[in-house]
Image 1 (cartoon, rainbow, N blue to C red):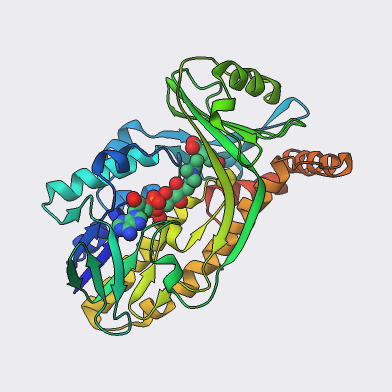
Image 2: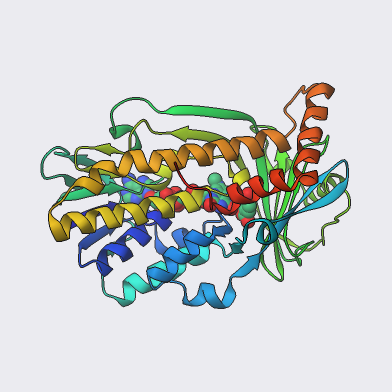
Length: 378
Ligand code: RFL
Ligand code: PHB
């Protein structure tokens, strides 16, 4: 069996690794160069199931050494911090280990194994999806048994499944920064304030990753470092950021989108090609990993036994989990952000909802289950 994988993000790289361990050949195509793929700043939080998948794939050696376990988060509202205990309520935790590092680890393994990974090679088209599907790149083609679109939200495969997707845009964006400064707290801090949302995350004991709600279309150039630090300071209440040199600054729009199906003939979609969530729930990377774990098992069953039962169930199984994650990400986003022109009534409802979470063990447990990803998909 030969599988053509389009995209060397976490989805494509992990799928390639899992297929290799199941004795299935794959070629991974990536439009960008290696340095670009390894340096693109993205997710930071791994669920336990994601860590387990990387361990099973034999790709967690550095993660075991450098990953930082988090047993809860702080929620700030009305200027006061309240802890939500994940470990105590659910027995589950999450891990800080940047997506850049997951990607570097998977690329290094694929290269060490001598397996095909073609950088600077954009796939321009795919054809014959109902027969022997074919990948077109440069002036060449590769005919496969299956093609998997792991080419993200801006790739070429997302529009190829039948039907139109389901979309929601939010009336705000995030300004994300990296700073050479110790994290302001040992766990993540999600802050609701009348000036808008803020999030304090981290990449290491000496590097902070922080996000600030800004208007859509905001220019990062309008945010000199001093303005960022003073705005963060106003939004975090009890906690105060440690200042340091800002080494990266970008504005990210917030959107949700779900494909109607993750399959068209012998083309499957996985990761951001099939669905995106607003980042407030920290779900995107974890969903991408869950997709390819299931897809690899389904292709392996097809390869080993000839049965297509798991492959036929792949899209529905994934989309059930995706919609649960959309629901949680939407809840976190709408509870914590202040939309332009929001009434005081709505702000009071948000604060009451947050107070409800931190004052009820049942409500806190529910948030912890959703955040750590231990809720069953169905
Ligand atoms: P990716 O990572 O976008 O990779 C797709 C790859 O496909 C390549 N490509 C092509 N290659 C060949 N031919 C073509 N025609 C191609 N078109 C595109 C691209 O160059 C790229 O290398 O998708 P993948 O693998 O599905 O991974 C998804 C994750 O990257 C994404 O869901 C997360 O980053 C989302 N996300 C978060 N997820 C979490 O689980 N936890 C978090 O804490 C979290 N934080 C975040 C996030 C995303 C963010 N941004 C930038 C939207 C924080 C942010 C700020
Ligand atoms: C991150 O560390 O980049 C991060 C963490 C939690 C989120 C989103 C992003 O909800």
